[in-house]
Image 1 (tube, helix red, strand yellow):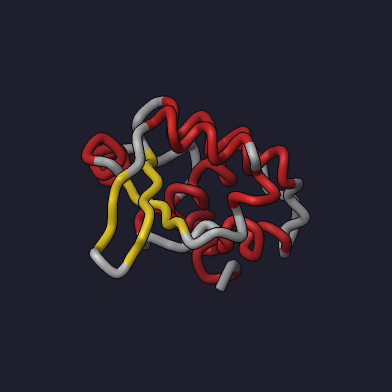
Image 2: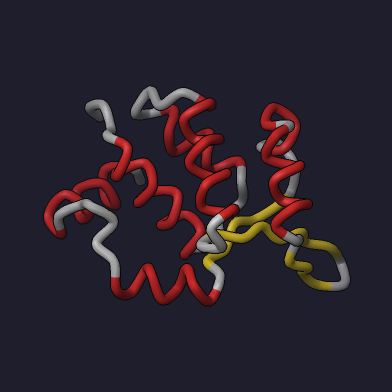
Length: 118
């Protein structure tokens, strides 16, 4: 896969969140496009800070959404965070944005990104 631009990275992080993907998929999906961890970490930090993406913890008792501050603390410790059993999700604001925003990515390019990252 060729190099991704900033909008495409945002789009793919949001796509993973829309699927409630485990955080390890941030590492595996972007490794194919040679996107550095720092770029993914920065994008995820921004999307969590603005309330688009959330992080949830899974346990035997169900799932628990983490606060923005707790999520940002986890993201800051990136090398540990990506290997833990947390999941991404789109918040209510994130779901609205997912349905209404093009993320700066054309429909054709978005389709290519979705299918080439699988």
